[in-house]
Amino acid sequence: MSEFQLPQLSRNMIVIIAVAAAALLLLSKSIVVVPAGHVGVKVLFGDVQKETLDSGLHLVNPLLKIHDMSVRTQQISEDANVPSKEGLIVNLDVTVLYSLDPRSADKVYRTIGLDYENVVIAPSLRSVVRGVTAGYEAKALYTAEREALATQMFDQLEPMVEGRGIRLEKMMLRSVKLPQILSIAIEKKLEAEQQAEQMKLVLARETQEAERKRIEARGISDYNREVAKGLTDNILKLRGIEATNKLAESENAKVVVVGSGRNGLPLILGNN
Image 1 (cartoon, one colour):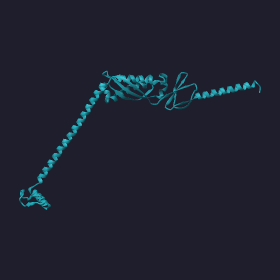
Image 2 (cartoon, helix red, strand yellow):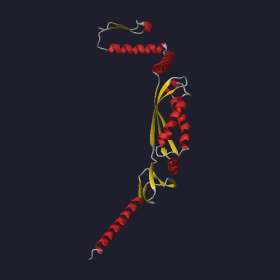
Image 3 (cartoon, one colour):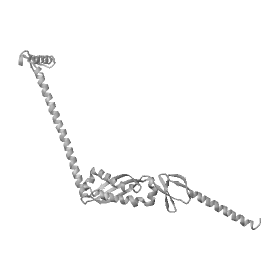
């Protein structure tokens, strides 16, 4: 083999290797895996494509850049000090569950970007919490109106984020911290109300017991009256004689005087 042929073969090998490497690179760029719970937003030279990629393996244009965006349920919490209707500062701990609408992923990426939580959701949540709380008295946040407050927050926040391609799932008011003086006053009031309710139960129970005793006494009185109607003198004498016979038959020492007792009944003396 001549000296001219050897460099020529080396150059051919280099070209083949380079082409193979380029082909492998293009192939690797063409194969995209979108993780579970995500959609892939396609961007070509800065132009965001309308169609998105579902989770799984895809063969795409190697010039495309794919951005994975989660469509799973996510949460954001806000710990805020906000004024109540009467101007007291109340501390609220609010948690919001939300998710990205897969159909709007390209719109969200184009108009907001990947950090849509801090750009849209967090500021909107702060605004709603402050606005809604200002319409309630502080003591109302300690009672059943707490749920009404969370519902009103949800109703106001939902259209604000839904129009931006984000689905609001649930809003939870996890804790409410009132000023210490107000908290003590409310707790004392609730304690007094509980004691009053307990006293009502005690009085109701005593009233029922008194009524039961009245009914029982009336029943005993009626019984005695009916029994008295049937106790004639002859029946009383018969019962007395039967009792005297039983006493006479007992082993105790006694003296029985026949016909000397009241109403002619036997008289029993001594029981030694």
